Image (cartoon, rainbow, N blue to C red; front, side, top):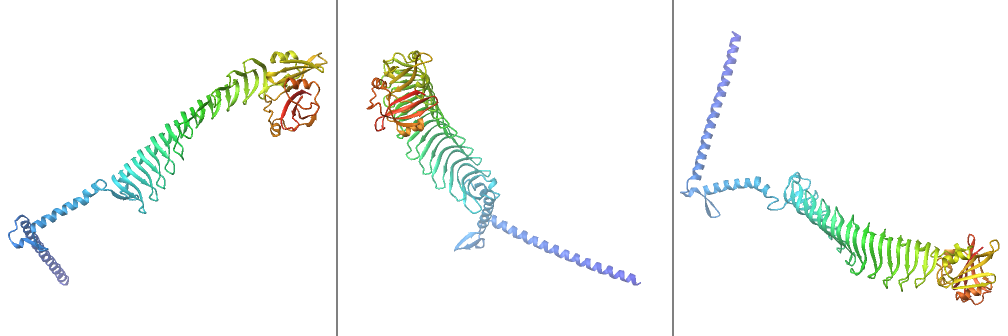
Length: 501
């Protein structure tokens, strides 16, 4: 009985709660229905307002002393809202960068995808680029700036790199290059300027360097210095170098690594100085050297490092007669050669050393050996058991004495006048110059010359006041000695003696 009564009470309570809940749901449904009906009525009224022409004052709103039809205001607001939505979400993103320039931060997600006209700024707001972009990279015309906001480049871009026409600027705003680019480097036709804006080059470039044909200008005067070919930023190939006036030719020919190399012509004040081969900026190979004032040939033959070296010919600049033909070394006659007088007659055919006849080689030789190579003498004399052969064309006297063992004359010494230099030393040579060639003298005395010297001095027209007291310097060599004779004040060289020991 008790359990049944408890169960009955629980059932009655649950049923009561369910009935209450059902009643709440019905009430909620009625509220929803009522609201739905009211919304529907309002919507119908709103639609009627929009579709029905205004017929009474209640169909208008008054503002600023004016009446506006409700339906016009509602429809207009709706249209404006839709248009605004489209502008914000569709038109504005499309137009930004097309109809106006967009401002974009370099570190923003938008930067990597943006295409159009843009002003790109860094995280500090400093402008680093202004111009056209495509997919997050400069494309088309634009201007690039450094981290301080200073102009670096203005011109065309392709895939974010300088390409096409453009200009490069220094931090001071001075243009230092104007022309064509490819892959961030000067490539094609262009002009270079120095840091003060003066032109220094105009012509062709390749991979950022002067390459091809161009003109180089003086950085101070902007006068033309060179016209020709370039490679790797240096003169390379055929070209013309000009003097300070920009017109007078200094050199025309081949260049290598910026210096004369190959075949070319060198000028002095517009006059031809040299024509032939060059190497590393020096005469080298076969060429012709000219007198810069008269244009007459001086030398024709082989050169090395700017000096006569090899075989060649020397010319008299007045008559253009060959005065020497043979071998040279380091700018001097050295080795086998033939010398001629100004009329072209042979004066000597034999060995040369140090730009002079190698008289040393004839010490100890016989008369026939000498006359075979020296030719007929100008004077022949015998005095004090000496045979003296004088060659005026050579300004030399060769003195022979009898060799007791051979029983014949052999060359004892050679005495030279001062018309020609010997070993680079001449009448006006100084003590310092003689020392640089000969070293320190073995002795310096007033030498008493043998009597037969008067004959030699007479033949060579050497003026010695007192042959018994001649100031002299003696230099000991390997198996011979060289003595220099001077005037009384020892200020002028008068004669040179080469003698066996």
